[in-house]
Image (cartoon, rainbow, N blue to C red):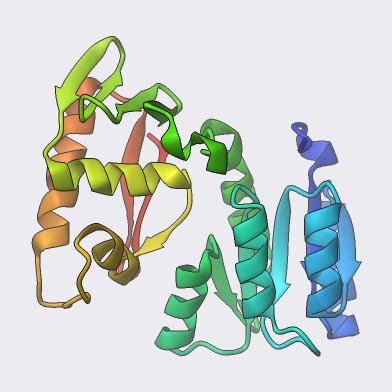
Length: 239
């Protein structure tokens, strides 16, 4: 069970550079957060899985178990736990790999502390609005987040007492986005999981389906919408 009051939000900071760790932890505590600090990937993973935390700040270059591997295991075991990756590596491929493994955000070093705090606040605001779908819900007929419900039998979505039919790919796309509300899905991952083919940057198929899905969400008056992160992908968030 996670804390619900901002003053009791607990952040796990996994950073092997003691100076950076202390600086970030100090500013997090000043902002009203409780902070747990770990200095290796293995210790960070164990704390993330065993302690009550609301968000993880994960450095990538860690001794022993690296941050990417630790994050992947956290996502597998605790899919609703938000992860923000911190790294000096700014290559596009590394950033996309981080999102592909399940990170919710990625900040390159050196970073502005005010920007980091803003990203944390934004991520924590999104968490209560979505109803994460647990593994045992995969076989349920109806799943949803906020006021939006997806009927797997009828291939329809419902909100505000209204209902709209979905074509097969619109259904698969919404089902994927609903599997982790608030999580940023890279374009390549979406295409591979929905269309079962490699992503071609020149293709507009995904964009067309996103546009149609947005129109249907607006038609319903749903309180959630599909948000674009330019150059990266899409996520389902409160409107």
